Length: 142
Image (cartoon, rainbow, N blue to C red; front, side, top):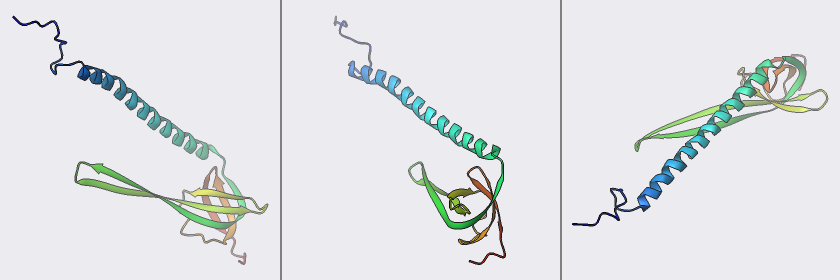
């Protein structure tokens, strides 16, 4: 008759797997929780920024367009071993200079980027961090 007193109940014959197994059931849920919190915080931050801009009153200022820039962000997503999805998103920004010399960059949310040129002057309607309209002063000479 054999002695089973040293058998630990593991089908793999040792307790090292049991320690790794316990570690995985401790570390993986913590890691998933941290990723979940980061995603939720990011969503809340973007949502609060949108609400702040949307609730800010629209203001019209006389200004000159001093710069335009694009921010292109590429995303590469791998699905399986042979399937990859590439996507990109472009954000357009317009920098205005006001009569007092102050400059501020605004996110273009109304597709004004292709309509205005650096050096244009006129009335810019802004709402928070967004530029929402620009009415060119036709009498302005560059």
